[in-house]
Image (cartoon, rainbow, N blue to C red):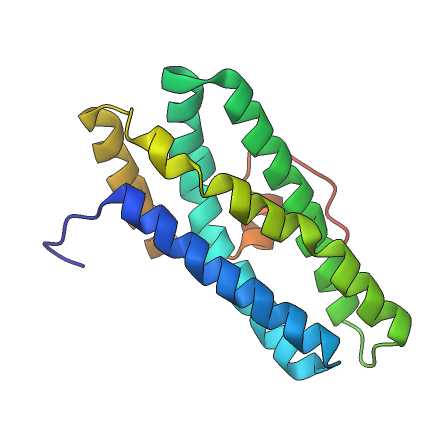
Length: 169
């Protein structure tokens, strides 16, 4: 990536596509009761969402709040809170050695806020077009920093995130 100028709008869309695809692959693994595949995809989601959410919350959402809409900021943060709780519940389920039918049903049920957030958050690119060049420059720097750190979502939520939610695992 050295010498490459990132387009924050494209980066957010690409991340959302990766998360969307991983989410549906995860649901397929859950439906097939394939624990090793579900755990593998959960790990991918946790990793992709970690760097992505770090730069969203610490940079993009702050710009949204300051430049565009505090209500939108609050809504996005609430969705992140819900998804962190979901990921925490899923982590607790998949720590088990053997999963019961009840565990599989619970995994499928609790995962829904993730796809909801992916769908609603993907509207951000049209809002980002309203941000100034300084904001876009700051977003580029935040993307590089978050990806370089590459901290998984649940670890970031527990150790670095300013806004705390109850984490189950």
